[in-house]
Length: 189
Image (cartoon, rainbow, N blue to C red; front, side, top):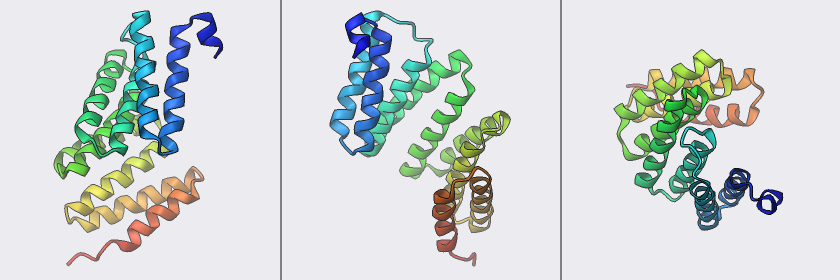
């Protein structure tokens, strides 16, 4: 790593975090956690400012590792750490991402009202920013929440919105996935 040879801590932190993402995608969660921890260590050694989207990214990536392990408490803590930094910076895109991640945590825990509210918050930000793919993600997440709340009509509408937006942005694999959820949705009684 050139950054290591040059002693650039921030570059090293970014590289370690990127390696952590690769390990997580490959299912090597212990290695992923180690890489993200090394990234945090580089941050602490350099005593970099907490007003940095890279630090928020590292916390968010650690949250993703913990979510993959089903360690919802640790994942939630990491997402809140990331969100606090992003809110302080006014970094709307990152805030929307972290709200979406927190919504997943709450849905997995069965805290459906909390999940619904936080996914709506993520959706509002993404709409303002015109982030279509992320809007589609939140429509799908909200649909899953409403389905769990036995509100099939709302879930059906949200699945359809997600499908439309995924079609607009050219994501046929997501259209197919959400269409499967929609097809499996029971009729309302």
